[in-house]
Length: 113
Image (cartoon, one colour):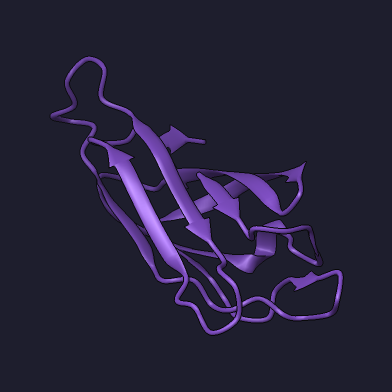
């Protein structure tokens, strides 16, 4: 999953991801406020990822807003060939603008990035 703050930030770490129904197992800083997280589902069912408010700050010291929850349903038992988890992202917009989460794809494997 991609987490995009829209500008360079400091302080964001793997422990800042709250995952229900699974676990965040890796976080890569891609630079410029873009991060890639690996989310492993514990089992088939709902997996929800949240980023709390204040976990990162831009270079001017402004802290991040909370994300909207991002949820997907894992169904590996009925997965068809080619099912994948792609295009998920959390974006932290400018102050006063709602954060948005968008998704594409149809189904996810137990471990996805």
